[in-house]
Image (tube, rainbow, N blue to C red):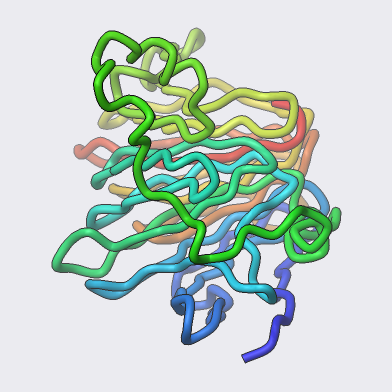
Length: 283
């Protein structure tokens, strides 16, 4: 299967993206692994997808499908166990459900399903493919022969853990667990708290937990926002949207909010709500 770009769903107003209507796509090649994509949004500012791999599945790279991009990325594991390797440096990381991995542009990466169930991963990517940061960018980078891929850092054998700090400072892939997040409490309502996985000059990604019966304060961002509901029923109020201004989202649903729109999140139930969001380029 030759390379062809992924579909790019775009929106020009605040939009509910129900799971049943998400754009499906198959990415990759048989000899390097096929990945099942659910593409929620791919605008001029941000790219949000979910990808899946079957038990025993993986993705690597080929000449046509090179896994090195000109973007910051966060991979948040929705289910299963994801292994991610940088075949150039030998770094190998594992993330389980509710954990994430962050890396910046020019990072080669291979993915592996390390469990007995489908692994599903929420991905935020900015600058997005619309800016030429995916396939066209990858083809400008020096190619790594697949036989040269490394899945371990044997150079540290004989000096571990003494050189652990040096290894951590040189990382290109950063595991992000709950203890690693930059936390904040909603200043206006104290009804929600957010942990940031990354906050760079290109992409901000975080997870918000909305307590039962609570709401957030009104928000507005300089960049476009995409989100994904992990658990619970999330209501969103967009007071300056045309037409519908009150939305109800279920788990697996997404939502898109263009830059400059006021918006507020509500939990109208007795259970907590969790959603993961990405904002690009400016938070």
